[in-house]
Amino acid sequence: MSFSNNVKEELFKTLPQARHCRIAELAALIGMSGTEQRTNALCFENRVAGMKAQALIKKLFGFELKEEDEQTKGSRRGLFVLRCKKEEIKVIFETVKIKNQSSEILSVDKPGQNIHNTLRNDTVPGMLVCTQTCCKRAFLRGAFLTCGSLSDPEKDYHLEFVLKNEAQANMLRSVLASLSVEVGSVMRKKAYVLYIKDSEMIATVLTLADATVALMELENIRILKEVRNDVNRRVNCETANIEKTVRAASKQVEDIRFLAGAPGFDDLPEELKLTAALRLEHPEVSLSELAMLHPTSVSRSGINHRLRKLCDLAEKLRDSRK
Image (cartoon, rainbow, N blue to C red; front, side, top):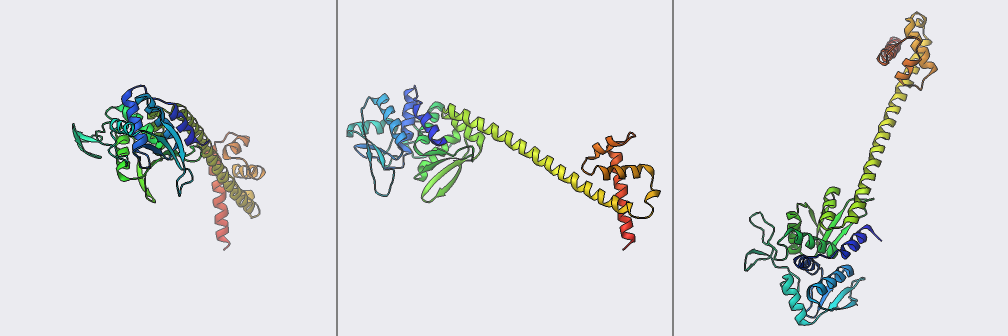
């Protein structure tokens, strides 16, 4: 089972205690659905979302709805259908503030005034079903069950909601914004996609949706990836330093051998000849290790100064022979 399916399985098992939160989650399950509803049935492209709606409807109204799997043309998955009586559909729609069979959820700016997707006065569109923070969190949970997905965090950080129209996208974006969740948006074919790629923001969404187990798994993966990346950075840095040391030592050995074969080498100061001999004998060691090999006390910077002087002499000698 995928990570996204694990999250949905966990959210499916989370049933709000408060009636208003149950209504909010049911509103998202129906209102964020990608299918039009019928006068005698509720339809869902996602079976888990449909089963969660069925459980909420039973808790809220006591209705026993018959479930069916319905095949549709052009779709491999088909629909998950809950058969309802017309009077039951009417009660459900009135309770969750569904405006019509296209599943538009009503929002209000002033009491008694129905305005779809109102955005004013720096407030969330005062959705009748999302008047409290707990209801917005329940609505988010329902939206994820209906149209959300989350990639495997081992591979990539990517959470998205795929919505069928702009009104749904704007409404969900507003609910997320009221919960301090920032999303990006993009058109994919004819769908409106809201997405999050920041791992901390994804963790926030899982927290808000009460996906505790998935959140812990995500955090464990984030920690392991950070440790792994830190180790890789350290290894790469050490590798680069080693390569730099090897290149420098090879150049020093080449210059010393060139000087040793030229007249005047024996006239060099004893400390230069000693350092040159030790470098030829130990071409792989670092400057600090080379300093420790000297019989007399000498610092790393002192060794570096001597080797640079030897290399400078070699360069001058090469230039004089041109």
